[in-house]
Image (cartoon, rainbow, N blue to C red; front, side, top):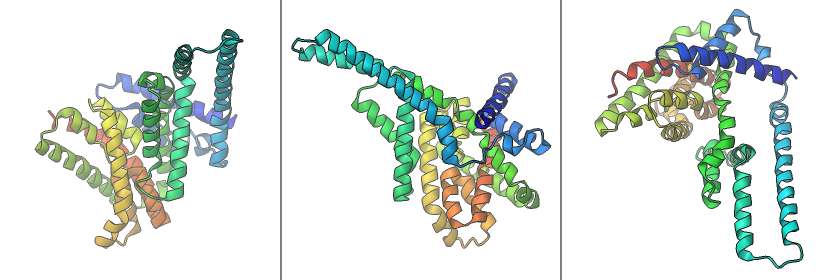
Length: 339
């Protein structure tokens, strides 16, 4: 019951954020508005951190959120197969099967099965689960769980000739959680509020410099290479976390698919190169290391920062939220420089 109340609270705040987004005269995504709203509510004490963060084991949360729903959807799937199986047996009882008719029937059954919303949900969850298993097993940056999941979904759709529209019936349900998921970064910032208050100037300056450098380099390179506005706005938020990057790109006329690829590649490069660059430039301060990694390579870089040390990981997590907010604001200004 507690986890349901937490989900209801986050979605309620997100609904308010969508209302604010609708009345704003500029493109400011609801996923960032909910981050700011929840952070204000946490700082003022109106909402307690326990109201939005379950203290139980993460695997238990996953079971509570996904277990019953997926089991129910699996039962529906079994029911569909059972009905179709009985129907086919009824029509084919005592007669030799016609290969052409059987092939047509199986194709129709497959289309009907993949057109159900639960197909997209279960395929996405299964692909992500396998991707994370491979990532944990190999511990290689190139074996990113999300990248593997994307490739697996694409492979299934291509091999079985499943239309993207059929997959999106269920994928859209998962996409609904993308905006509210951004609220989790408000909890991260709130948890590091004492560290932020103590070192607010270097943290703020570091994040601003990181965001301006990342976005400025993209603007300059896209202009030199002659890329159009859509491609430029797609690459502009590449250094921030996926939920913010995709909505920023979409809100400014970018292509989300390109943004997703750019974010994944940026994170992989940050995960691979961060330790080497730290040694190369002889950066000794753990705060500077964490801020630099979080500002340029979001969550995938933060995973490496956590391996380097506790302070590095904490500062990198803090940088993800702050850089996401700054990127959203600066993207509004970038509209004036991108034709």
